[in-house]
Length: 126
Image (cartoon, helix red, strand yellow):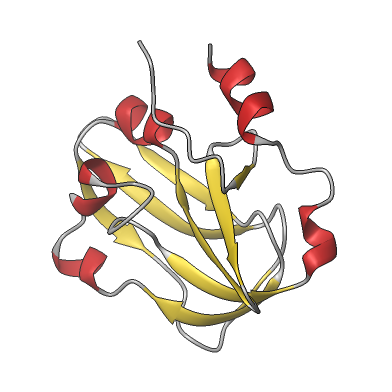
């Protein structure tokens, strides 16, 4: 099965993505991850102003199959949270790289060192 992989993103082996946009970066889970989880029914995320640390847990996603921890691909301050996910967690399934984003973080660019490229992530999931 083939999964969407956004070439503008970098990836963690644990299936989170990060997409830089100026001084901030958006974070979410991959198409592969949402497919493995099944129907997402609940998302727990930090609040604006909280700090996240690269490779540390920042939240939880719950599906009909499993509960999974979410890990931050970069460190920084949370500047936005996708509050739509609290009422519409299915957005993670429907559009994981778009409307299903989770956080926006003011990040350290050096955190991108060591993250997987789109090609490396695709190789991991095939």
